Image (cartoon, rainbow, N blue to C red):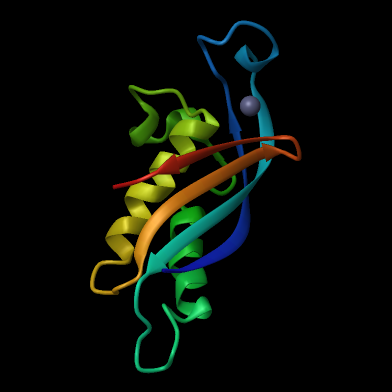
Length: 123
Ligand SMILES: [Zn+2]
């Protein structure tokens, strides 16, 4: 298997209403996001997917989160915009963007600080 990973960033604000402590109050993060795709074979160009194409698709999804108050997005109306759910949001939306490519989206990791991240592994 081959695995490719690209990294990017977005800034957002959130409140985690049910986590007691500091995270209950409005605050922001500069999330670092890692996206990994995998494939058992390479395309005609000898790659899983062009890094540039993967990065463009990723940026398209991150743009929907950047400089937003995440709690206000419809996706997070019934669930908390935690790093876990943000990773899943990016996974779900990027999965649609990658339809037609044979690179399979494997996981999305959202780093909310240098020391803490959440990863969503899709199926
Ligand atoms: Zn937070």
